[in-house]
Image (cartoon, rainbow, N blue to C red; front, side, top):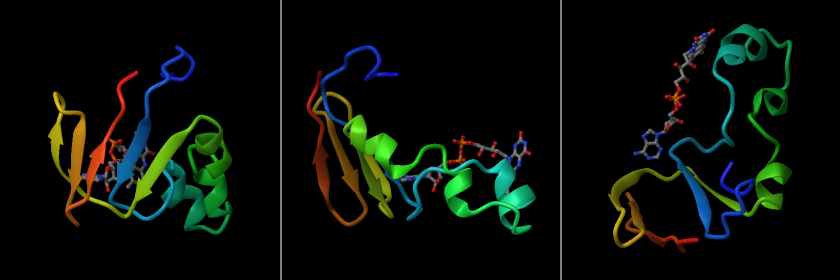
Length: 85
Ligand SMILES: Cc1cc2nc3c(=O)[nH]c(=O)nc-3n(C[C@H](O)[C@H](O)[C@H](O)COP(=O)(O)OP(=O)(O)OC[C@H]3O[C@@H](n4cnc5c(N)ncnc54)[C@H](O)[C@@H]3O)c2cc1C
């Protein structure tokens, strides 16, 4: 939505899980039953995020958010500086 609204700042999604974001309901109903591949329960394929310049920082836990300084810190000590639009 931010890209649709012409937001040109940086966008990153930080997730503790190592996978790209996926739908939970079909996880138990389709994926575990072997009826769908994991790629088919993802919210979007990797290409979608790449094309919109959304950086995926996976397998990282956020421990602090500084909204004024635009800095997110992860549990491995990484400080992510986000560029405002
Ligand atoms: C197997 C399963 C089946 C389900 N089926 C249904 C259904 O049929 N119908 C229904 O209505 N609901 C269902 N649900 C529940 C529904 O999926 C949840 O209500 C929904 O996932 C909640 O969405 P959310 O984005 O708030 O949280 P989540 O989906 O839990 O996503 C939060 C994400 O943030 C990550 N995270 C948390 N803290 C941090 C941090 N500090 N740093 C980095 N990452 C962090 C977590 O690792 C997680 O990936 C199901 C859930 C599961 C697990």
